[in-house]
Amino acid sequence: MEAGPTTLLEAVQYFASEENCINYLKAMRWPDGVVVCPTCGKRGAGYLATQKRWQCSARKLANGEAHPKRQFSIKVGTIMEDSPIGLNKWLPVLWLIANCRNGISSWEIHRDLGVTQKTAWFMLSRVRLAMQDDLTGGMMGGEVEVDESFIGGKARNMHKDRKARAMKGKRGGGDSGNKTIVMGVLERASKGKPKRVRATTISDRKKATMMPEIAAIVSTDAKVYADEFGSNWNHLGPYDLQMVNHAAQYVDGQVHTNSLENFWSLLKRGVGGTYIAVEPFHLFRYIDEQAFRFNNRLHADGEVVTDAERFSRLCAQITGKRLTYAELTGKAQERPEDAF
Image (cartoon, rainbow, N blue to C red):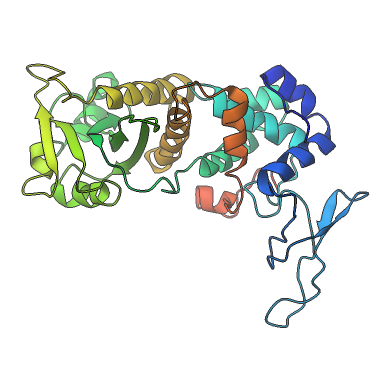
């Protein structure tokens, strides 16, 4: 495959050709050059140039039934499956969301690409599914930071009646009412390994909620750093926990959560500045988006990951994932007019 684009302008020009789109995604999906049927797994499908799709040589499945989908396009088995939107629009969207630090809104995609806003939102949501961390990096170890943050509207900006309802039964004071709790775990950079973060929404800050989430991704031999709230969730826990009291100081030698605070800053800038209002039900998708960009900023040797490299990494993750509009919204009867 010839060298791909290195800038957004080059990407738009390069992917205007459907042949370039197919060849690029083929190299990402099947790097050894052997096309695999997404339905039966048979290798060596033949390319039908006039139809721009492949045909599996197998006529029957392993169970003896007739092969239901012998012919398939590059979209089948990816987040783009069943989408009538052309690859010349899909790939620029992948480029933009992979490389815009604060994200890109569905309204911007709607205006720039000429699709409806609802379709643009659906496209971005499917790309965010590809951005999810499948835990392929294994357990986190070494020096690990654990922290939680509150994402959502500020209670002080609400009408007094709504503010009273939002704050009813809330603990912690301040401006935490009506917000979603997000817990983050960050593994600090070590020799030959850049820092990486994982984050998820949680229902509360109790030990019964937080400890299982931490135990699932943090090795018990890790050094865990947290703020003073860590004593609540780690009481009699298995970790070597060191805490910093933010009321007195933010850094005590190696004990701090500043790297995670950096991630919270990026996340809140995107949610509050680009997306404006995010429903708590969908918040985890926007967290996955920001975590992908954060985790793909540097190579293991400390060199900066280029936009083209980050785009390629995202394209390599679009296979084997599917999100329908019904799953996204829970309303099967409502579909974008040009998304199916």
